[in-house]
Amino acid sequence: MTSMGTFIKVHFGSHALLNDALGLGKNSVSRWYNDDPRRFFMYIQQLKKFSNVSLEDLVEMIEQRVEDVDALKS
Image 1 (cartoon, rainbow, N blue to C red):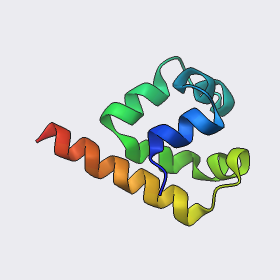
Image 2: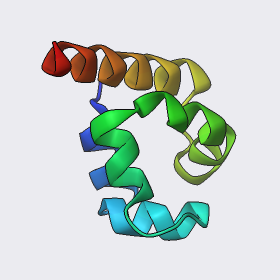
Image 3: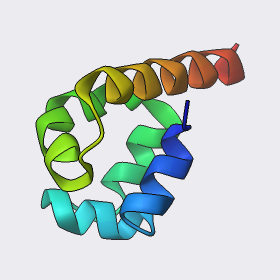
């Protein structure tokens, strides 16, 4: 399975470009990625559309990132 970080780099190039693609404010993706990856679920349909990655794989990537962030916080 691809990590969320790799997914962003491969399909968008950077957090800033993903911000632009989703119409988000500056640094939103970075904040979500580092503090609250669950926020990506709100945009899962757009992520699927832009990348053609299955919903199942996107859910798995986001859930793995949630686990990673929770582990880093504890």
